[in-house]
Length: 554
Image 1: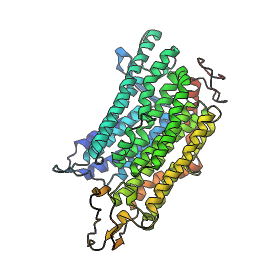
Image 2: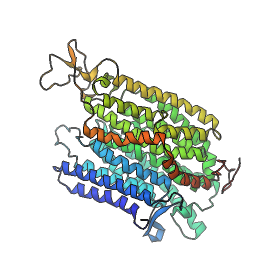
Image 3: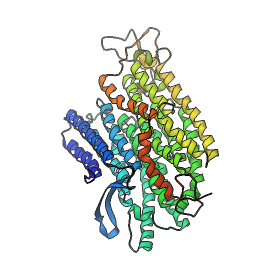
Image 4: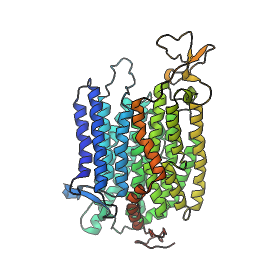
């Protein structure tokens, strides 16, 4: 099985599927979404087969493919995965079919004076995005990684800008400009790496294995590190580079939001592990305190902002910024335990926050509003929906027994020996997480029926409709509670919706009680990364600045 080009297939299958779906007439929406589901399930199967073919105890990069692309500049179409990259491919394989199912009945927002937009393009952009996401995690050529890194912007831009909320165009442009700026700065560092490799090796190369063997002057490392770091800090995002995410997460369609915070943002933290630490070990150690300041500031700052949010989608977006702070803390603590926890956090955050976004989307689909104050008492009318909402929230706040707890626990116990002050401050974010998650759940699901559950009896007819308060803005308005009102029936989860949430619910519970298979998958790659920066994988001891190899001491 190792001779099968699994990674090429995982990139090619959704790309071809996107082309086929895009070629369908706009009226064939039903066929388009059926093809999207079939292709995404095939990619999931390929991800499982790739995992079976992967040997955690074997070489660092496996299932490799390398074809000359631009020989004059040493550029190859080179693919390969370690345990970290493979875990992200599995996450992509799981989330995309779930997103297709969650978006099955979605319709684009109406455009005044213009014909309704077809969802056929949505499914084509979604499949193209899946192909590019696989490519960015599987690339082992730095230039190829950059190409996938930038190309991902295009389908996400159209998913937000064409199928998002009322402010979708503003959010899409902001997302694109922020990410493009970071990518252009990273390109300068990519070129710098090529120049350094050319001076040391006699010929320029972008191959990751060759680049990490270079002995780069520490001052030059800092400059090159800065270019990569800025791009990854924007993508993650870390405070203060985060302002695009709340807008994009709030305005993106639910499926797009799930992939945005569940997978695309992980490219930033993945980049820290894959490129910043191994290629620039001295700069990583020297600048780590400043990165940790940003990480811990993001945990507290984003959590405080989440507490004050009235828009459910913006709230979930801010929680993701706080979670990325924990991931960055685990990476730049420079211990094997903390880095392993960070990788697990990347996977588990995608599962837990993906489920939370999907459930929030189901609530919005029933009420027509993103505002927390427009809801109340939903648990009495939709107990299954309330139960899944609660589980997603508890997983997001890392309750013991859920998948996120293992990740957060490993990050904190791994970071404390080397970064005790930052770790102690970060624990405040755990308390705030409980506050913003439980407050949202309590306001939406409990208490007396209010907002969208109320209808004026005088206006109610056979086709009961909701009557928004005058001047409050339609679907996102606070609905009047008239003197004579009765409670509308709200349907609970349908069979399709149960099928959508079941895989993520199962993963939250299974990985919460038995995370060992995932730990076994990522640990060898984490240990290899720690070795690259001079950390003893056994003792988790940071090396002295300027040293290389294993076994360094403070």
